[in-house]
Length: 491
Image 1 (cartoon, rainbow, N blue to C red):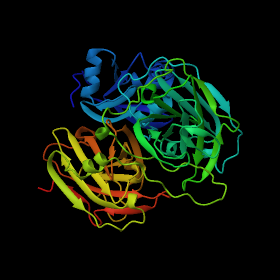
Image 2: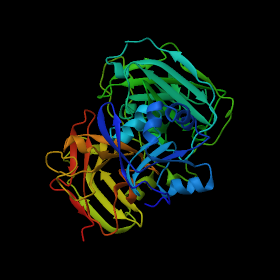
Image 3: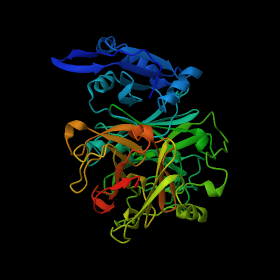
């Protein structure tokens, strides 16, 4: 990857806390003056004395992605959003941090430590003027654990719907799937999904996606995936952002409430407790843009995990399936496009749940993308799918599950991770950011498009892969192939 920059070729040794830390070469910072997060970086991170001392010993370059040249540089460096820091040694990328917002995060990047990242979809300079948030408090210590204990729910409407959930214990991006943000967009309780506390939810945010209610009755957990959502962790807060253009039938106010749930989908906490949070919608009243594809054949059908509905009779709810259009099933049966197509078959019925029962994996490539399609016996959930990639074909480096070894990268849900070298072969990963575009769920299949540059896949280079699903308790449900990883390309 060439950036066209003058580089420092010498290795710089920097003292920090009595330890000798090696920082090398150049630090690129992709910035946007339209981004609130970038403003926080400029005001809070780059002015920090510890950061200033560190980056003075590097070749530091700030790149404005709002300019034509800056955007070209961002595309060349495969930077999908700002703020992003990229650390280089000569012209070799050592590591990067996408959308960090604290001095500690930047110092951790320079030190090679784990950095909290974000999921969702975005683009360089993606942000805009934001309205003040309206908030509702919730009683503390009313959940089984601090990481599910909601203290406050806040929201605002502008070009984007922004939601902030304050939690007793610091959350993680991964734990965002344990929170459901219910949205009554048309201010009508008689339309949409009914939870145990409120009714009228036309949409729900779960993890990195927005879903639209498509059930035939208010108690049917049935939703269609609409679009990816930006997810951020800041201190003890989870923050979600979704374009208002993705929400149709907007009323003068949006009603919003949040439910947290345990790992086995049992209700943990509701907020607010008395009535939904009312958010004034002055910018999009009467909006009809749904953000959905214009034709039914382009629809992405999926479903979030079950929400805590706390049935009064105490019966255990069954995990629902999503709606599937006829075109969805047709698409899932078609061949994966690209060259060097490899197809792996796995026996059906070797997992307890159809959605976790992998039956086929297809791998192909284009000039710059690695294409992967996974098919299950039932409707799969993104968060249950894992793709492990041995990019250097060395079993001695990377993660090992006890049977297969060498995974340098992992795709979990919509997010790419890189294995941490300091944990040996154990489970330890740094998040590299969400895929753009996100994985496409179609019928019983999920299709991934991964830039080869993200995993260092060069032409004619071979990699090894295996695929796995996990249940609600994070136990392995199915693995494909069952023996050694598959080598790709085969020839």
